[in-house]
Image (cartoon, rainbow, N blue to C red; front, side, top):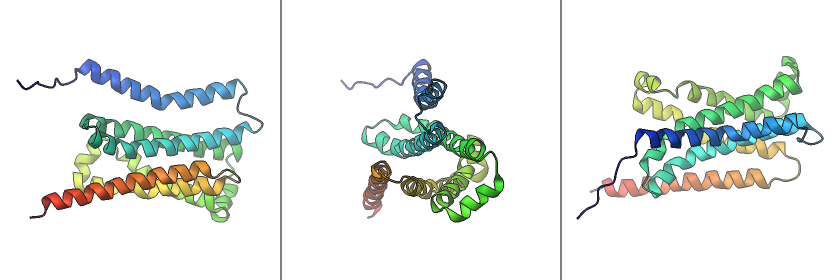
Length: 208
């Protein structure tokens, strides 16, 4: 007798969604607590800016990993968490930028412009942020309907450019230990290789 897989209840769905939300919010709460406790080191502003940006990059990678995880573990419902993770990634990167502009530069727009033009890691980071803005704006179901699924999907492939820009931004930023950005770059490469492999498999299945 075949067993019937029960669909998760709405309560279970809400519980899982709440856990995802808390997991994404927890690093920000931890950073805030460490800041108030004076535990961000000798240069707390630099530490805060860097950690916010790194968490944004991590969440972008988590968002890219959701689809492979859903396919590999046969849990298609995981895909519905991509939007939440992606919006949290944008929020962390926005806070990363605002902390740099507001706290480090004191809203000195002339200095910001000079940094964008003269410091390659800031040029790449700003480019990645600008490309991320339309993805955040169009993250709602309403925008999917307005744009059409195909156009919306094409726009959101910008994330495949945004993540390597973020990795390069981080790599050029650090002066000594380049291992973290290299690890993030390797994870991104692995996720892209999985997509290529899956695409080739789908093409073979569809060919006569």
